Image 1 (cartoon, helix red, strand yellow):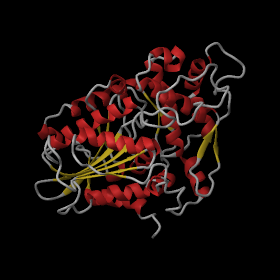
Image 2: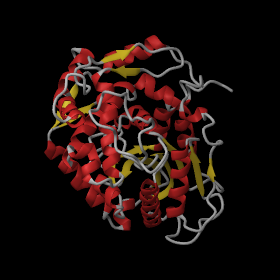
Image 3: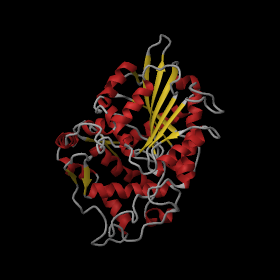
Length: 424
């Protein structure tokens, strides 16, 4: 059973597995679509992409506080938080798949170096995001001079943390109220109850034979009150469970032997199911619109500007490489939901991305199509070529059978975020 927390709604809804299977089947059909079917009879003019970095180790060593797990955590070949070699290779495959997809849609030739200025690539300043941008460019345009724009490594880039960097007006009490309004009856306790089986399974993996001092499920979950200049945070079981679940996913995605994935106590099915804890953390903290619109505002401006009133000399493809929080924020702003094989619903996959594509019909009217593109989890693990793409509804644009949003309507929705930016 997949748990999906729908931001901006009053309850968590449980989605039966057949729903996820149906979404996967649709995605696979779209992946194999012919060029005419992919474009749907429209001319594709621009695409703007917000992408999560690729596979990395845990950001800390040890991965979690001592005592959470009964045994030492598996070792990694890469420094904490850095893109792994395997993660880079997987992202390079994503770049190859994106190039082929964009060529099918007529955005640029299938081979050769894109014309100067055609590709705009911007990455956050962490090593994992810079290296992800470089790997994507290597796959997308091998041997070509695609500039990956970023600040010096580890120099904070305000674009990727607007609340913390003070780029928007932010009221902690309003953030708390927005999160409370998005929770179901019973608040965070009700969310924890829905995730209880997953938390208990996490403990069985962390601890093996039960011990009194091991695991995370016994800690009561809470939403810590927001602070000035800080995004809201979870504490307790849901917070720790989300971290543990993501570590297991990264171990699996990086191709570790199953004996090293959760100390040999986690299965591939566990990795997928427990991803619900990671997705739930974002549903609680990152998707409520008050927080989402503010934290993603500078990135939303880049994406909005990339699709506005195309003119000669504009980049045809704009790619922003950030973090899972950034992707979840944009998903919350636009109320987008996706399922990719191997991942829980709405969980931002390593190397996964929201794509916003500008199309023009025969009469000159413009529309925006939203998709989510990622490698299935087993494809990342096996370094298997190809991605899965799911076409998404944008409820703020009104539901259409073709999933397209009139460009002017889309621009107004994005303005709800970008207009929050302070003048600088």
